[in-house]
Length: 402
Image 1 (cartoon, one colour):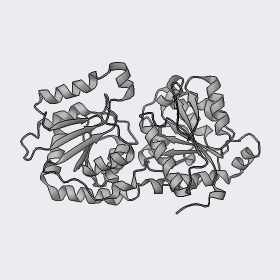
Image 2 (tube, rainbow, N blue to C red):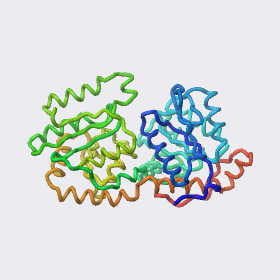
Image 3 (tube, helix red, strand yellow):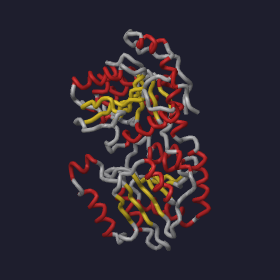
């Protein structure tokens, strides 16, 4: 349903942004696009992008590029955001300047308009500095969004903050993932996608397929994505070549395939729909948000994942199987069950589709619009637009959005 444009508040998005290859950049572009679709216009939906150095020819949606670590740039970024009704800030420690990205606090402090902060990482064992930054950030912002119940519980248990300022809005997924499966090959396809680098557990995944060589037909394991830019800058192709060498040494040249493309959302949607199963072998025990997991479930794909927090929450419904971290044998057993027992896989797919119907970007965008609307009609926001310094007092909060 499209909104009445005359009443819509303007939003300044703060995040990394395409062409930067980054999960937060993709998230922000997708959320902005979904909000524009609902509004019927991109007008008033501007981006302050976070960069290490200014890029040539950013898109017209990027009204300012903030260079991390540059104080003058930071003040200008705040000035640009203050021309909007609301600032919507994506937070990850590594995307802002300063130790542990503490520059985000200076940015929010200099805002005269209400701010919404979306937390992409909530650590269970933060350093004292990381804990302080997150607590101060939630305190300074008017609303804080997390993308899983696990993240909300972790904030409540581990951090000294007002939980009434925090609400759950799930990570979104492309609605086109809802289409029928495009898997039609004789060999079952298992897919992992995203930027490639240490910590993704790809070594364990490759070893798991060495235990499945007796299956007929043999499965195909497709690793889709390019090397993470920071890994590429530091080590070139050494990490990727190491993965290829591991697959070769295990006799998996005809099983493990590396597709080095970084796809746009529509192209990625097609590749996900072509898969039979999704494998998330991540090593992290901290991950409370996984866009890849959300997309896999939204596509109705049975998932095998390591026991990271978001997987435990989403797959506990029956949409997939959770296995221990760094356990190639456990991974192989779970994959063998899915491949060998079609009825079991079909049940998982059915559960995933039922969950996925709540995760598409239009529904997520509506939840963000509800928060924006509430903030811009509250007394502190009205005062800010009239020239009074924003008080940062908590507003009369919405019920939990989920």
